[in-house]
Image (cartoon, rainbow, N blue to C red; front, side, top):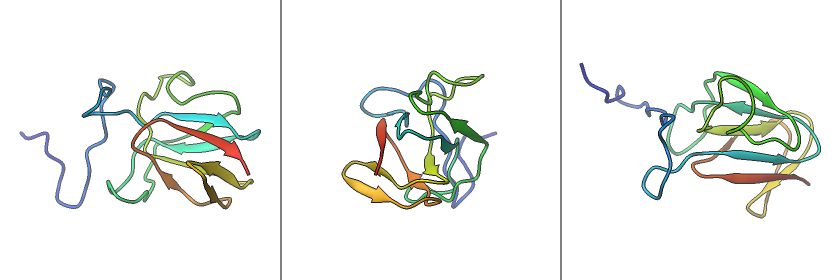
Length: 107
């Protein structure tokens, strides 16, 4: 049995992610509203959110909220507000693929 994912799929990072070569995707919500998280994406390059899903309240981060904690998140979106990360603005409903820690703010 192999730990290699099927062709076209990407294995999610495990709870042991961290460090330079295996970063964790942690979402920090400072938007003033709730964000939706997707634990896994269908691709390494774009979101294709495939769940499981969780809401992340304002002021919280994905690594320390909910049970169990999710130390690695692949996709983030706002369902109701424009949001900003890394100087780029995203409309409501657009999934954002993350590979490392990202701070999200209201636009």
